[in-house]
Image (cartoon, rainbow, N blue to C red; front, side, top):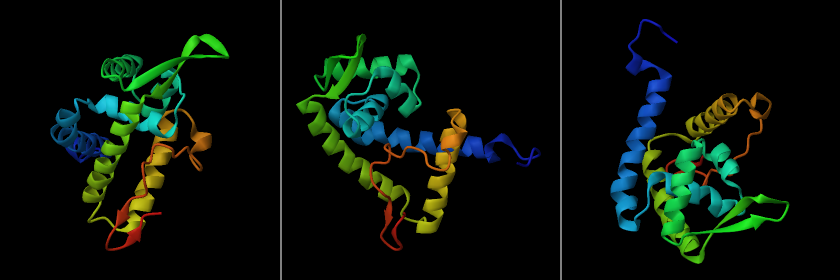
Length: 171
């Protein structure tokens, strides 16, 4: 990395900026319409494809801290989008599941998320997306301290393969 360049030219800053630029429209497009915060959606997105996780597992899979996950779970519970069930193997833990209302909202928002993803990547070629995806998987594994999984990381957080209409599927 060029140490002479400004911070705004760093890969890290650009990554954070992309996250911020994509998160802002979420609240405008989806959040207000469904009374859903971004962290509640992140939590739902994971539980929608992997029901029965614990809060600790949600922290690990979303990258959110315990307080953010706790607030997201409280919001989902308040809106009757979440059920907690005792873990039969450890009664101190709860397993988390989307309620019927939560599942319905998950399906609705997932469609909107896929549409937004397609908009974001419309001008990016399939090979570039494949490389970006692989790089992000390695970064996630590295940051999570799981370098041994960098070659084959869990990909359950991908809602759908990104398809660029001009170049076909990204995978």
